[in-house]
Image (tube, rainbow, N blue to C red; front, side):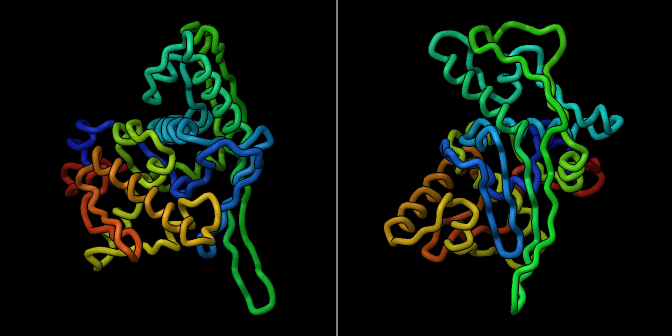
Length: 293
């Protein structure tokens, strides 16, 4: 994908993966060890024996990991797949956009972030295509572990304590290849300012849809409420009240996104979310001003 060098200098450009355009991680803590999301023939299943990652922190962590993987892809693969996390917990927090200090009442937050990292490192993702026939369903897919190995510091009592060697997460070859095949550019400055995990998911989704819409003849496209629910609702919406509350939540998330991305070009309508053609969060320009990723 091509990005504008001048624009990249003004923005904190990061990346995400098409896998994470789906709201894979729950928004709140759950006892479930498996989460499955299906949209049309595409079915993605996340499994974690230590509990599913949840909330905003794993989304920020995965944005950091994916961005680092893209930046390191010119290195030998074994080196590129080893993502450095820093020599202390506070140095890592700064890298993912959190200024939390590891003292006093912040220890609960630090413990939560450590927990989310541990859940990520033991997670696997299964991507499938499900084909429905007259008599039965057929599937084709592959399970991908996120990490091969990891070494995590983390002393919530002293988050400034540096270790002799940096902690790291080493991505599996399959997950690393999935990332670098088609990374989606995003503005990390925006991502870090979105406090709600659903707003983070909607922002990433809109970034992809802006690229998608730029390749179509249509000047705009309406994504129905049923389509949005498949992406952003943690459960099926059975009642009118549930559908109303979901629409209200999406509208609030879009309003928050517009504060940091005023040119997003999207409106909530009775039919769904109307998205207009326009620049994605990281703009594309003519070839003479571009680098190829």
